[in-house]
Image 1 (cartoon, helix red, strand yellow):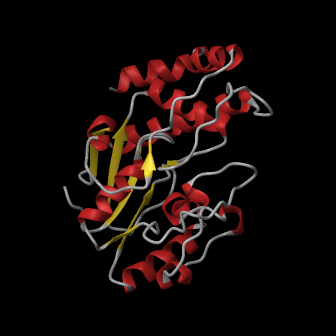
Image 2 (spheres, helix red, strand yellow; image 1 turned 180 degrees about the horizontal axis):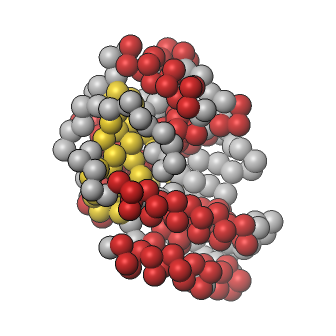
Length: 240
């Protein structure tokens, strides 16, 4: 499926959207996500957290012309486009349109898209799989892994991570995700695809799945305990 207008991806924080944008942009050169010229050698982090999302973009005049609110820096456009103030988002969108391109980025469920022709794509990944991936990413303090990245060799521990906050963040995030799904599921511009189908698509991407790690007992118990989101689990079951 090739999209020929602005395309926004929904479905949760760990649903393969980064991988899928590489697929979409490879299939349609008119789509623009701001990931074409990432400097993969960059080691920029934010608050001690790393990942492709924080790496700089080089040799991209369109990207350089865009405006980013300070609180979203150094996040990549694909991740933070819709976290901008709405006026800034629309100004950036106009610049992208003036360049003959269409934006593809992560969607924010509550964002006002009135007057913006677009497609919404909901990538459905099971809740428990997303939780395990999200919890692991927060513990490792690394959101994306690239070919050549080296896994931590000793057992992963909780360290200074506020596990209660991680649980709260995830529960709130997924409730927002399901709110958006229930609001838009019958819209003509809303498409649902499965995570497994996304990850089976062939594309040249620098990203790899999170490599295996070993965990201490506290982390293992923490990841396996899903009692904190029992109502979200019930909600997922009722929706799908």
